[in-house]
Every structure is written in C-alpha cells, then in structure tokens.
Length: 155
Image (cartoon, rainbow, N blue to C red; front, side, top):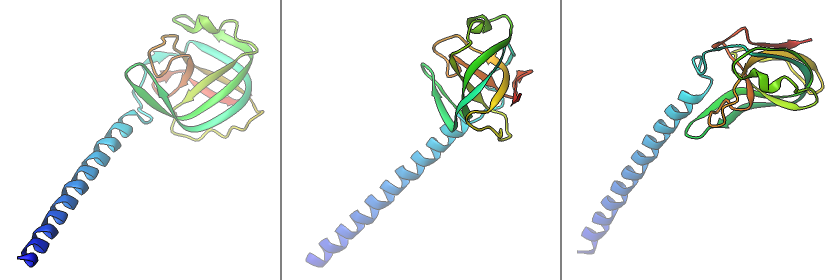
C-alpha cells in the first residue's frame, strides 16, 4: 500500500510541476507580447512637429518606460535637455514651451538609430510636445518616425 501512495504522490508532483510550468510559460508569452506592443512602436503618435529647442544634454537613459493613465510606452532613449534657446514653437500644444529657457525638458526618442549623445553636449531637438496629462507622451518632446520633421542633432 505504501508503494502505491509514493507512486501516487509522485504523479501529483509531476502534475503540479506541469501545471506550474504551463502557467509560467503562458505568463511569459503574454508579458512579452504586452512589452513588445508598447516598445518602440513606429505608429505611436501621428503629429507634425510643434517645437524646436536648443540646449545641453543633462542625462541619457535607455529603454525608458513612460506611464500614462491607462497605457504606457517604452522609449528607446529618454534624454534630459537643459533648454538654452527656444528656436521655434508651432501651434497645437507647443506654446507651453515658448518660455522654456533654463528648464530641463524630457525628450522621448524612438528612432531606430542610436544617437551619439553625451552629458554636456549641445544639441538641437525638434519634435512633438504633448501637454495632455494622461498620455505616456505627456510633458515630453517625442522624436519618432511618426512625428514628421522631428530630429535631434549636435548643434
């Protein structure tokens, strides 16, 4: 009788291990799909550039997760920029940065290349500034393929 119980317990252990491994694999696949969906989407935002700034790079962070109210976005790079000059301000939300000199703003960079930036470097940036608070793109300048005319370059 005891051999039968040991054998039965072994099957319970095997069955429990299979169930746990199945749950772990399913969770990993679902998590990967969620991350991949929000990581560097090429169609994240469809807008024209509405601001151009010049300033000094204060920080560069890779794979930055920006949270919104019910969504998030993973930017390839998040660049901190201490604004020294407001070059151009367009309509549709960029007006909030018309007097940004001396402030540090964030740049969410989603182009596929790796910008060769270092802290202390002077750059010029043009992109889309979103003033809506609930968006993952809020209070930052987005530089992405889907934002026409956006760029960041040494200058």
